[in-house]
Length: 303
Image (cartoon, rainbow, N blue to C red; front, top):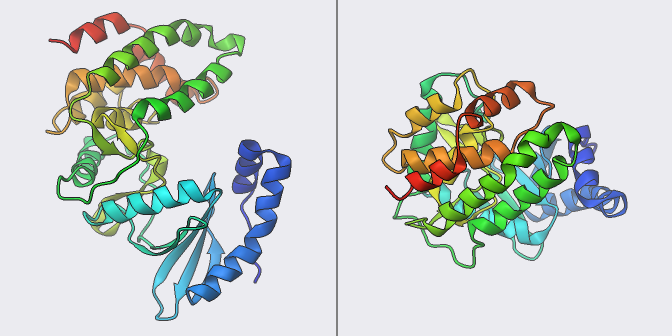
């Protein structure tokens, strides 16, 4: 078997886990791929180009079905992801989970075609497709999930990343905005009703195009929280010709979303996700946050 790891996966694993631990995991991949290929009668074809915290291998089953073998970096995240995808696949909102190994978190899922990343086009159709995806993922008929972290725990990771990034002197404006953004986030978290099961990283990079152009979600950080935060994390850092306010107006037509909460969450993520080295999104975020006052946004939530 001669499967080539992408440079992106190697760099991401080493950055996140460190040289020693990361190299150990990367060296184990050929053996683990062979093990699960034998266990589930798979013929590995190639390793997916993307990936940051897992290795996805395109395979063919014994009955010629296209599938994806996913080997997560850790068992806990793999188990959570397989549970989440199995739940959302009931509504056609994620790939189907075909088999799993709970001890390792490794699982097998259907391969979605065309399977391309749902990069934004700049048109309102993008927002309509996102609303449709959120509606399917939020169906009250889906199976329950227990023992999920609250949204504030997952937001804590984004705050840590932002604080570390904002140590650079070039981020002084964002550092000045940070306390207001976090106070606003605290208000949003304390007033969330209803609390729902959400993906928590439903950005364009984690949405793939399925049959008939329908969007499907992958790579979740599943938790309990506000569905408006779900939509805001998609809208705020999006590289698009649409402004954030235009996206808010489009998304507010979705019955599951509330415009005031959506705008407030967009402010939070436009601050936390700001990256000066991506000018197309950075300029868009600054144009959105500068005219707004987080205190006013917080006050608007009670009206």
